[in-house]
Image (cartoon, rainbow, N blue to C red; front, side, top):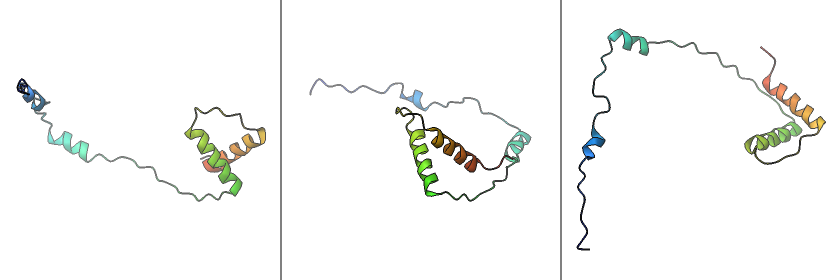
Length: 96
């Protein structure tokens, strides 16, 4: 290819220009306040839940419904709906 010409990269220095031309000058108090900030951490309480095989099947079905919400499905039967609600209350635990 004798007619191929390389193009010079004029303007590539624009890619490497500093994004913040002025240096931010924070005082030591501002920096110390940001670093030494103490945040309240809520204590985590772990619980053990025991599920029956039927409850596990119900949880698996609920996960599939939540994972693929765009798939058309029939509404659950009333007894299954009540079982789902009881399972939800069991997982959520007692009100605080």
